[in-house]
Length: 406
Image (cartoon, rainbow, N blue to C red; front, side, top):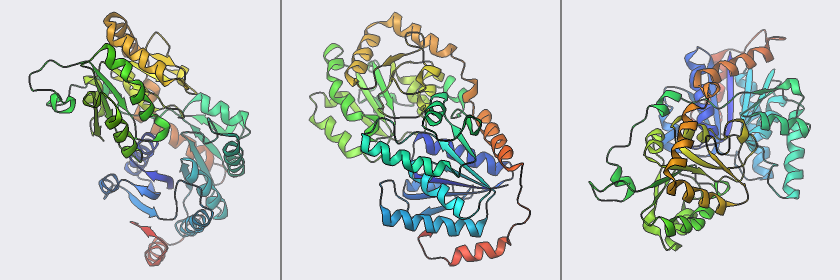
């Protein structure tokens, strides 16, 4: 099977990690896989894929709406798809989802699939909602199947006339469960925490999230003062990187408790950070069903999370975590304080986290489910012929419209 994945961005964040896990598994299973991503990417992450995947950078594909660049990206993707002739085009993220599906339609690709990691028309202004919803409805007309990260994402799509019930398939974002369940502390944790070697570990709060405005790091930092007032030696670890890095750093500098907050950037072993934490937190304003919530649970830690569509599928308030109103970041900070001050309650939630059934979030389960969906889409009409591969590679190599890495 020839599979082309399209991402708007290639950063170290949940939807990208989910997509890469699928790409690598599909390549290991003998499929031909091509990953196309837009202009915004992490060079180290891209370099790490060398030898494992064929990757193309599409410079015209960007996250903000830009009519001229979007039209150019559409044309580039259409030409690439006509040349490479994939059986499946699987799009991810909002902009790639729209442009990629329209290009696949123009190129007459038989299997057009969209991964619903997040919905762009949720928790935005009315004007944006109308624009995004119209674009999604247009692309939905050409979509054979939707792969939703949660039941809530599926329900919202169907309620807004984005595909019928038989087109939607819920597949949870998989990861290595055992890696998180059996994790140990990082080496030399005092360096992460900014404490002296040999000093007892202070209470640790962890937010594991890409540095993006919708994650609301800045708002949580502003509310974190109430935690510091009650627990002066507490440490807040912010693990992740992204476009809001400078805004987050400025918020820390402006605070009266800058020494209590540690920005540690991307960390290759998030499971060790979770093991180090006493309480984990996520204050996102807009998400699908973030995989990090399940990673907190798999690590057996008490967590405080914003109420997002689908959260109730896994986090039971007061049983294996605390769910706070999405619009109230201050409530999240207050809940963190309560958990740090109440060891018995914290231990009870941690025990509930360890008991949570996360089997459907396993990596193997996710990859198997995705492949079954591909097969069900292609079964009625598998394409009979494919252009010569050498000719395709030659044409791609000769193109000069901003494609890098094939």
